[in-house]
Length: 267
Image (cartoon, rainbow, N blue to C red; front, side, top):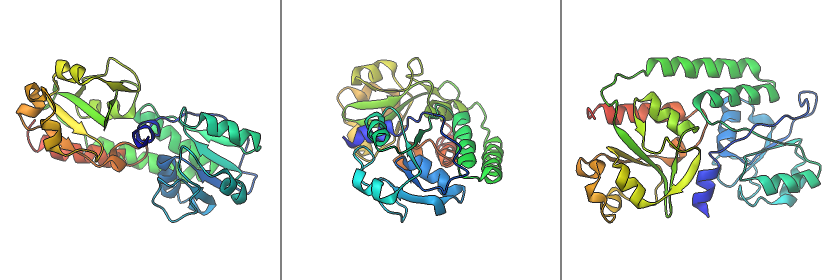
């Protein structure tokens, strides 16, 4: 089930909530990328609980798919941050408990900026949120790349059994476009499973493995993958899933890493 967590926590949604500024905020985040944003906005003083998938020193309220509702009730949150569709059942349970929830859903880099601003508004950290967004945009401007790798096709692997990847309308696709790379599954939307035969047929020039379940040699030894350009030319890279698969402010570090790694090799 972990790969489903990895895939689905990438998908946020955005709902309206009551004006929370007048309340004594007590927030539980069941979404690691949202937790990252809260810390970046210096709003962790109102964060009373987080999921087991987070690495911060806060009260853990269980797995992000199956949280401990008794712990949540005990912490008396005024708001719980969720992600859809992963947390649809969780949202239903929390509604029965009269606990407000919000989900945020970046499908692009611009959506990540909007998520930071929205969380900034909830936390009453609007100036800080604007500063963070402006800073990230400034860093992006400094990372513009030439077209050396333009036309290079990329397969981005989120999980291996079954193969999961990202298509259009995802921040991952945006990252690849920013680097002048072509996502081989950009003709599809969202996050989905694919057959190995589809990857072989689309013949990527670069393969990015965004999980730690395999080694590069494992990928090279997959049946018939030796016919793929990326395998022939040793263009297979394993990257930090915690850095690459969360639609939060760390996406800039992911771009930096790929720019340094791929462009230093000249494609």
